[in-house]
Length: 518
Image (cartoon, rainbow, N blue to C red; front, side, top):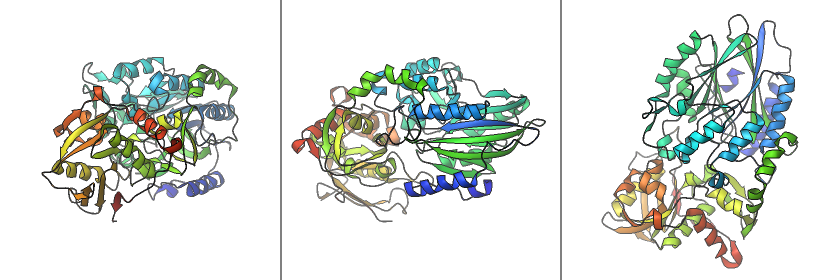
């Protein structure tokens, strides 16, 4: 099976994804087969980037009540079953605006999650809040490279690694968070992300010395970083990751790497066969389990649904409608002009009467396509869950070109960056094949070519302006005209724009605001 993964990352569109799952079910040797003599079978159930416990895609996919059913069935098959999470769960979501991530901790506790690595969006909420969420967790958090300079220990005094003994063999778990976390969250300055290679090379020998000859890394990093980890640190047998929000498989230096689709649309099931004498991994079987409405809800999850019933009902209140399909998929808003990106950017611009509306694609979070029909409070807050103030700033033409250049900057590894812009009042053409600083071929504001000395007003998120979020450090030089304290919030602006549309119905279209040449 490892030979099937040698070609690297394989992002799937939905039809290919279905084909891949079909092939996986047919070709993989399932863990129900008899164990080889002298081995211990350990089953890992893996998810990542799970922001809500209710189903998604109109109720057809996801839902942690269904995931609980999958875990219960796996435990019947193999009592040596553990559930892992590849980070990003307490934020962002609609419910987190009210409950600050507690709802997800309650859900995972109910299911019986065993281990989770910290994700970058765990740090969207305040440090004291995530510390409280960690205390409430009945499972173990890992963040082996997340250091607190105040305490001079790992963040939240987390374990450097965990070793679990099962039927006489020991399996080790270690966790790594991506280096770019400060750019993509509200992580405080006293927290530092250590180099994951150096950390792994320091800790893996300690894990081996403690008897763990099979090691699983839980990561929340880009795939290219996971592949680098497998090459720079000897001794990792399996990497179960997160962050990209899509089903991915790869292999590096003989180490298999897997990530699931976001919001519990799939559960990865991995059966590890470990030699009793040596403690080393002998073989691995795997299966990708689609989480669909064909799977019954576990009755044991009902208390969570009951606890949060009121907010779930409030979120279903209608605020308007759309007469056209809306593309809020992450890979779309992070790579090209979209209809909903245009509408949100227009709403920003109109809200503070600016020349330009500017939205970093990573702030549009729903990762869904919406069919024509009603739009609810949940839809609005799912697309813009961060509650960011929309500030008004003044920028020069020279600064604006720097902003646009940064917005389209990318590498072969970082092909869907959250910094990619959705815009209003601007049209620009770019060529990603050109060198950094030369990718914007032409750009205009309200039909006029941008000049260095020109001055423009812009409506954008305070996350970009005051924190330099997504690497937009050039906003530090902008003159602030409306600050965060006096600014409207992003989702309020969005909802107001929907309600003020004719018949409270929106019909956004792509208008050629962004042209990519390559």
